[in-house]
Every structure is written in structure tokens, then in C-alpha cells.
Length: 152
Image 1 (tube, rainbow, N blue to C red):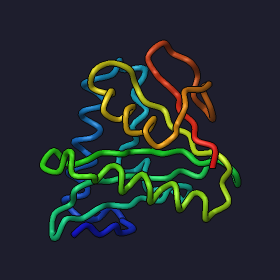
Image 2 (cartoon, rainbow, N blue to C red; image 1 turned 30 degrees about the vertical axis):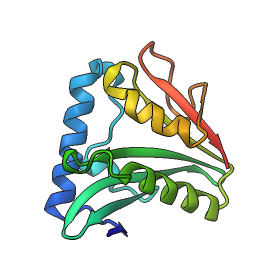
Image 3 (tube, helix red, strand yellow; image 1 turned 45 degrees about the vertical axis):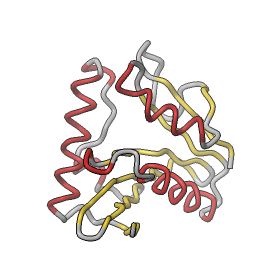
Image 4 (tube, one colour; image 1 turned 90 degrees about the vertical axis):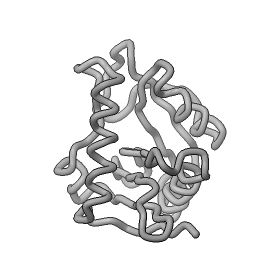
């Protein structure tokens, strides 16, 4: 049974999954197009982090950055390799969308890369209604990043 919890990033399993996420982004992206946040980057007042647990094991992580009163950004979405294709990412994404709506946000956005490593994430986001769009916030077009948006 899955349980989604607000996370303060102190658990070793959460930290390990976030380290795996950052390493994956660095391995699959050009150095100037890695926008994944490290642990310190996720521990700011404008970011909320949740983990999805399968019993005593962390199965996934996701975060919501508040960009403004009406816009949020999805950050650090990652499913643990032992829990792929079990609905973890979808459950976290639904949770983040619900929280964003509950906070009165009108748009939820994200930045991701291109290429085979990013196709599963892109398929997930598009299945939930995200559409391709322009760069947002502090992002600048760079030839590698893709920007997706969901009107809430």
C-alpha cells in the first residue's frame, strides 16, 4: 500500500533517491542544461517535497516549487528503480497537481530534457494533460530542454 508523505529530506532513503536523480540528470544532459536541484536547492521555503512509500521503502519523490501565487513548477520527480511501472510517478503527479490546485495555482509547469532517457517522463506528463510550451521562470531556451504546462 502506497503512502505519500511530506518529506523534510532527512531520511537516508530519500537522500539516496535524490542523489540518484541528480546523477541521472547529469549523465543524460549537457552540463549547461542540468536544472535538477541538489539537496540544498530543495530545502528552500518555496519548495515542498513529498515521497511515496511502499511499506518501509521509498518508492518515489516529487516536489512543487511555488513560482508565484498562480504558478508552480514540478521538480525532482523520480521513481526508485525497484518500483518502476507500479504507478508511483502517477500517484505523485496527481498529488502535486491536487496541492497546486488547492493553493489556487492556475498553471503548473516543468522543464525536462530530450532523448530516450526522458521519454517515459514525457509520456507520463502528456498523459496527464501537460502540453509543450515556452520556457518559463528563469529558464532560457537551450536546444535541449523541453517545457511543459498544465492549466489547472
